[in-house]
Image (cartoon, rainbow, N blue to C red; front, side):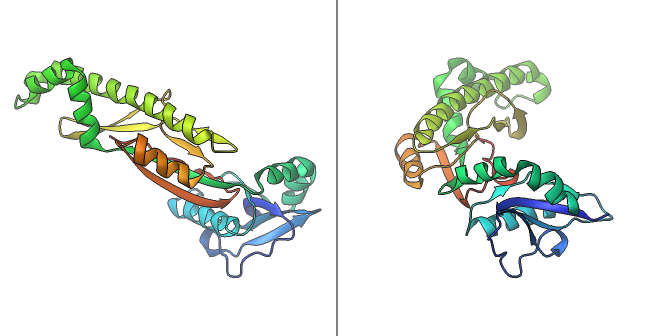
Length: 254
């Protein structure tokens, strides 16, 4: 038995960067087959796979190689037996994998994070909705037990208003950025809203603010500077063709 961790797929002429280590410090190697190669290392044994350190190691390997060549990353946590790297991964899917790498050639991925400025968006919500403003004033200074129903209603209204802004702002971001991209992916956010001095995580599947897309850096700057004043922007370049789990867009946070 030789459990092997697979980080990603590349063309077989890659020279693995010297000293590149993977999970638990295991050296990263290239297993090649007919023009394609898999970046691999020995998988950890004697412990569960999937720690924070494992994820960082996976990202580090993919990012290091993607800085030089196109990488088709494997899903985090991919482990197979060493002979199966060729027999089950590379050989049966050679043409499909080669085409996928070719599609990524010449592209750079950016992850874009939209994060609401908390005070700004909450102020907008209060100003825009008289019911929210009235409830906010009503519960101010009142013990929580004595204003439970009002606080529940206030929380629902605030969340709904922020979600509506997320739909609008997310749609605008998607429209503007995807026009500059070869491909784009939008993912639903997890909202963290201020609820009467406490933080509460509320997940919604239908929103469109958390997004992941390959974009032109200048377009992001233009968008956030002139169109999305209430949003902060963080764009991170991953390298040629890189796309993997640990660097998707973060949740929107008011």
